[in-house]
Image 1 (cartoon, rainbow over the protein chains, first blue to last red):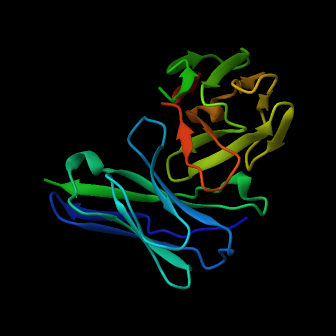
Image 2: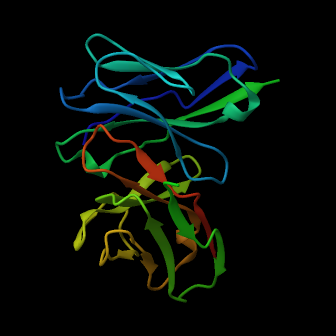
Image 3: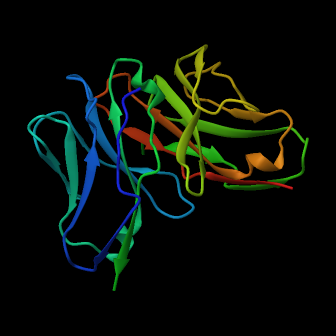
Length: 111
Length: 113
């Protein structure tokens, strides 16, 4: 199964940008990079996903390296409500429907 | 409104008493999956299903059963719960293609005494 590596935790201040990295050196050409986040005691929620080009939506931006071996989720102005565990996963057709989430990055936002 | 509905939201039970956590989606998704989350271990997949009557084991299937008799429903069954199954459970659904996002239920916090 395609695997991702993320830092265990990160900390930032309110209203500052946050860059959450993810390494996926074994990514295949057809794997999509998905990001989800999980608030305490809640199920995960979708944030953003992409294949090759950078992506933007109302929640965040996704910057994908040219070789696709890494990506960065960007929260442009963090708020206290963005404190969560962020998961980067690969969704691809090579049996990756097992969708390994890993431990994710616990993001703390300081007021 | 597109949604994945899990019930119950909270459940406290005793060792050995069979229980079912229901999951239903209204988006006609082929793919559905169950995860458990424990401190320091992140989300681990229990079972997944690619379509009706098609299910497969994830990383931690021991002690769990699932069924997919209808496309919209994917219940998680604990035949004889044990305290080590105390966890937060999340159900997900998604379209067949990898370019589609996953939708998650709001989670079921299970405590087995």
